[in-house]
Length: 510
Image 1 (cartoon, rainbow, N blue to C red):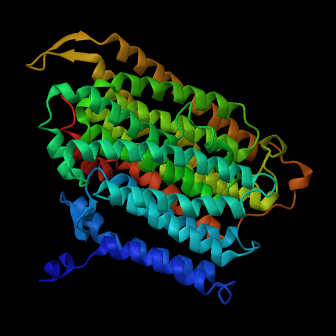
Image 2 (cartoon, rainbow, N blue to C red):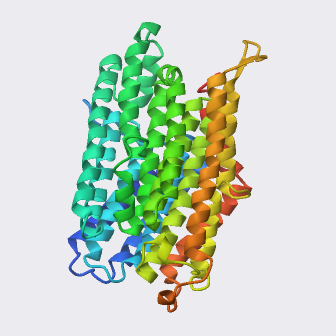
Image 3 (cartoon, rainbow, N blue to C red):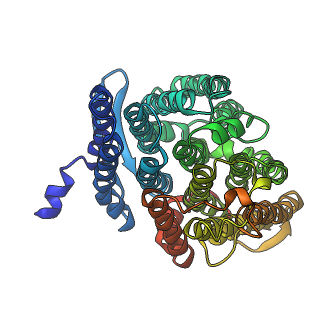
């Protein structure tokens, strides 16, 4: 009886509603909430996270969680779906979102207009969470735009004063250009299938003959371009380094740890699954672009002096890893790429938190002017070490398992099987791509070690003699993320047991 009662409660919709009305309440009463806005936002984001526990439980037990309602007969049924595909990114958004709000309480202790900041943060979280569970392309597009608007205002009003207007405009123009491509792609899909509902679209496309493959490739390219703008894949990444570097750090945590990953999730949902034949036909190009992005982002990260810009280019490189994994089009590779969404969210979110703590306590951004901060900020230094080693793919942290699976997926594709699954040859192009992909991990280790050495090791300059550890509201989220990285590294099955069954049918490759 208790289980049936739980089934009747729309937990996912309530979670979104709590974020929306929480943000609205803080904004409407901003004059009276100047000092307490952060704590109130923490409360709303905590409730929103707790409401998602039951949907997560359902997915962990091998089921899917769904809610549906008809908003308009013309636009068909809207819904919220949590399955093995949506789980990694939704889990990352929900957990990292709550921790970023907690972190922001300490980070904004001397900031102005805090209620407006926290209201926009809650709206931003709502948009991202909605994107990951939307079941209708119009619903998805609405959520996609809701994700953009508050993040634009957060950059515009709380970014670096000297460049924030230009940076926010660049962010808006790039992402809106991608949104236009999405609209065109969705329009063609509707003309082909007569439906906005994703499951209906997938069913209808299964009956379209092979003669439509070229058209489906065009649709895939349109949608992929829109999603790759959000992922900041080379060469359409130019908005990301200034935006992630100049945004307030709690927002950088969400932009790098969650928002750019919604593009990867959407590419899986709309491309790998819905447009399966077109995605497989274009797989090599996707994987090759991923490898190029890996190297470009890695080399650029090695050249940076600004601590947050270094991490921003690292995000570009890491999205290259995910794109490569999706391009190899194997069960192992795609599962590794989806798992990496969790690992990158927590690892890069943690690193941006440590960078923000350093900037907050020292007033510096140039890593060449730092050093020896492990003696002054030991918790921050230890957290940074965990994030750094995870991004570099060091066992037993979570980044090792996902990177291993992504690379293994590439080598799986390089092996050619016959109908009886006997090995009959080698795909040299994918073999070479996979070797290059593995080689790029040297770059990841290089820029992460440089970051840690320059900031936390060696002697500290005299001007940093009085630096102290940041407040508990900033260090506690770091500790929690560090623990999660270790847990998912030692027990990767917690996520992979959910992800692998969901992607096992996308390809003939193992």
